Image (tube, rainbow, N blue to C red; front, side, top):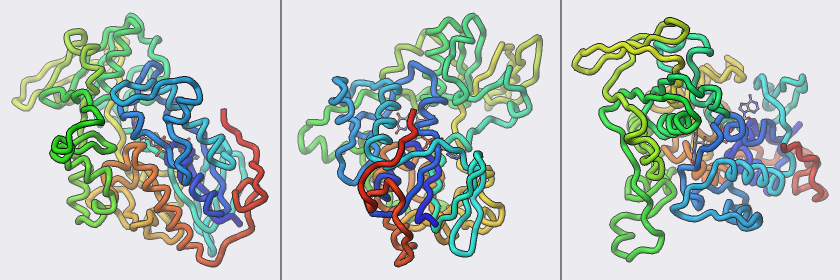
Length: 420
Ligand SMILES: Cc1cc2nc3c(=O)[nH]c(=O)nc-3n(C[C@H](O)[C@H](O)[C@H](O)COP(=O)(O)OP(=O)(O)OC[C@H]3O[C@@H](n4cnc5c(N)ncnc54)[C@H](O)[C@@H]3O)c2cc1C
């Protein structure tokens, strides 16, 4: 029996695994490393977060993005957007260097057992473990507006379905949404020869301003402090004190997560969108039906003015909504026993990321309604990994199993790393 199985090998899963292995916990890590970044983001995208706030976390603090970039002769500087390809390679390097072993396996079920959980992989392996950390990221929670759900994938896709947008060259593409994914997808579509337009419910597009220099006067820093999620006191609280957020009433936490750091385009994207791509604002999507090989969209303003438009393809850049009901791998008995956070459908976790089902831990987006907006960003991975591993140790108590080959509690040599 293992001490811990980490499901997921994105920034959160890899950070948790690194901390767990260093703590001598017998851990297995299952998942395709950096899958969201390798498989679900179009080539040509840039990191929106600053490089210094985009670190995965290991206990030594040595495996930073800056260290990776320095070792490769790359620049990772404040105020300079970093290609997501570099960040992806950094994550893979972290997985090889700071985690004993990652197995590229999909988990199909997690079921309770008397002394823990039975984890089953797509390959048919069953693994008994005392605790489980679910760090499955954002992809299970892809959100498509209701009118688009019945349409086939040839006509409607989600922004996370694309690595290569060149298949849309010459086509009229409507991108729904007003956040970074919508605006950057539209820019990339235009740059590869498609004819995109953006349709959004919002009355205006919000653009971030360029980040302030890291070195500023003490007064300026006091008025408008820097933090992992930008500048300003509200962001400072969300990013630097997630434990404070967790102590707020559930309904307030839900409101904070829904509203804080809302949709906005990065400062460096503005010139690539404004005056190049038509943006229809204040439009609610009422209906979408197949028409003439494409899609006919019915839109309506808040005042009731209706428009229809025809388009070859719709890309819903409408984000991700954490909902435990959509996590099919989790045994229904367990799902139904989970206490939920605030007024949403994500599990409530305690101060060490343990859910109301003993031994079952969550990380990443699913914990944003408990710990606040930083859990939606890489920045939250360090706080999570350190706390969650303390929680696992507390749950294990004296019940630790034999060391797993590759964990730092064993002889020290690393097991095979199956990173691509
Ligand atoms: C377009 C886009 C741009 C973004 N840009 C930024 C940015 O600039 N800065 C930032 O901080 N954040 C950004 N984010 C948010 C980013 O996704 C998260 O910060 C980060 O990836 C969360 O890490 P994670 O480990 O929780 O999840 P993910 O990175 O989504 O990783 C999930 C992992 O779980 C695995 N997994 C899922 N299901 C299973 C299963 N059943 N069995 C086994 N493994 C499974 C996957 O294979 C993967 O390894 C962006 C998101 C998007 C969509």
